[in-house]
Image (cartoon, rainbow, N blue to C red; front, side, top):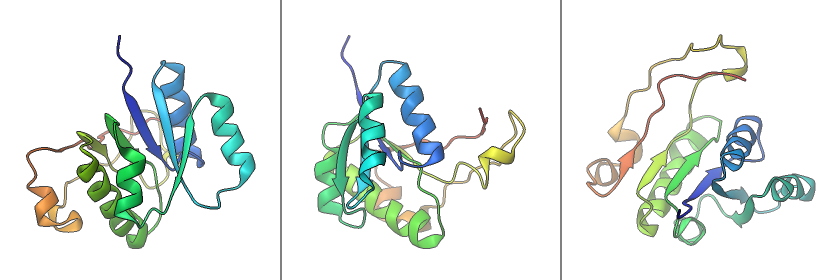
Length: 152
């Protein structure tokens, strides 16, 4: 069985850490994409789980392209306002697209997944204006939008 690499962006956070741990628990190969200057104890924790850690400037399409090359999917678990959810994720999407990654799962799973009842979630709607018309129309890329958030 060929293992697919899944890139998890935001794996040092609560949600990203849970996703990385769950993927590793299911024998997935996880590449944690982290910002430069991430605390060494957070990197050590990811490595102890079995993740490969790659540092990159999350605003650099070129660095993201290099960091996501060969992956089957990029999962973004970043949180923040427009500068993160739209601007940084646009760079992530562009870099992943340039690297030939076939799947991208964007962040914004829910406002606060820790305060939701199991099975509760908000509907996600794809906004092509947020990520740019060229990427939205791309036939080579699938956008995966989760519809339910279930806390642990």
